[in-house]
Length: 377
Image (cartoon, rainbow, N blue to C red; front, side):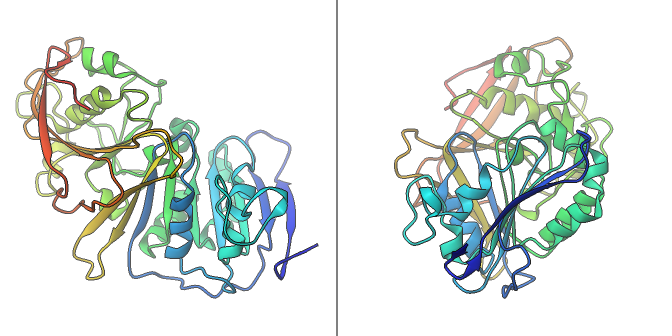
């Protein structure tokens, strides 16, 4: 059937029946002619905190890709499990195949904005991540979004593969890239890898060397990071921040990365960060998204928070930076660290400067024997 001049195709392709093979779902016309820039002058990244997706963050990605009515454009979703739930949400403007403007709440309206297709790749193995078809779809994308799930799968299945190289090439061309929840977690230069499962704040603060505290790259034996967007160099990102009370574990992760002379947390990462503003963290709450872009003069990276207007959460974003190395950081011993700076962004008007880490007032907390001296939120 015809929808606003586009041949609408809804289909899926499974490479083989094996669970290790990729699955491909598409809505729209993936072979349509595209008239958008291949390379963009400014960075465009989205960090989404999980829970209900933020409609306007997807629209921002589409606009930043240079997509407009009549231009065409391919929006590609990546995941290691699940199916095609994002495709209709991003493509349509409402239920029943609506493609006109304005988009209803809980719909993006990508077709009306100019998208010719939304495609989802489920990539559940290293073999799938090396598949030529998978990488052809990714390399031709005009915007990429990494869904939630389990970030350990992304690290295990995608890092060091052809997919890793394809995504890095998109970053080099400033193609808009975003992620939510686990997809957010892997967008910082450093990531909580969750290779031994998740961990809560109380456990991480009581023992920053708990086996579940798995970081990528490893603080003691670092290798190459999975993805390193330039605005997030030296940054570890975390999601579901307010609802799951994750400030404690973020501070524990940063302490493991920061270290200090004569301190048990010291790894090989600390020295490399001295000229980059130190190790820092960004925590994004549910139903919120942080939109990151370079300024027109390419001198700074700036960010602002957005959320759905009907959201019932504060949706704050927290910018966290240790001002001193931990004073106590040993296996089996509760963490102690003085002077952790926190900046809380809780509105959509304020612009935060990621380059000099400014834009909202800071407050300082400390951790003594695994406990904050004041509430950190």
